[in-house]
Length: 96
Image (cartoon, rainbow, N blue to C red; front, side, top):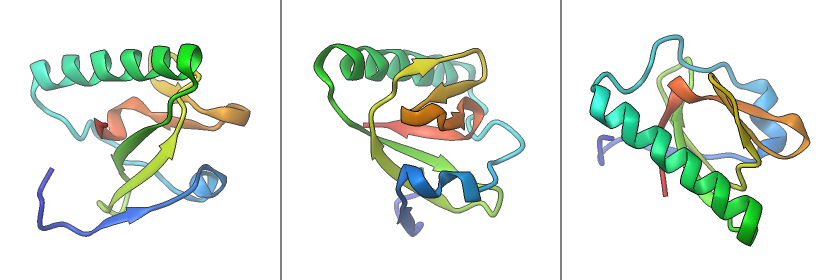
């Protein structure tokens, strides 16, 4: 992630209005694998300890957006937040 880019916060209630990146925002296979490790770790933290994480992702306008939330589930293509809100995994840059 480029440090000089502006990062926009959002809330899960507004995710429905966003369109996500069409292509995977991470091209490197090892970084994609680390992203999946981070997603699964964050899901376990959320389900067991109710910890929130910060998720950075790109939208279709190439903006970096972040949300502080709990990951409740993971499918092949998406992460699942509360109330069935989803974010495509291919749009996720990083999870803190």
